[in-house]
Image (cartoon, rainbow, N blue to C red):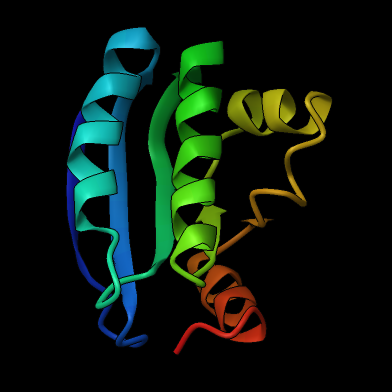
Length: 119
């Protein structure tokens, strides 16, 4: 799993993360270590590109929920976009699409963050 992250170009208090690889137990640890420490008062919200994720396990789901919880504890929000059909299906079956604010596109995800109060 590879994680790229940095401040979003459009929303100043939003951390933008991009994941590439398998979001399995090992990948989940990499994602957690790569993103959670960067979520803080300066970047309380997360815009997460999962376009490069081919598979998500229960450990990966747990990490996504933990990241959401972290943003909420900072009075921020989290959106997810770019999921392939396989990953999206897992999120839908687990009824996490609305909880994780899963969007079809990056533009939709940014709009959703604005609705949720991210600037």
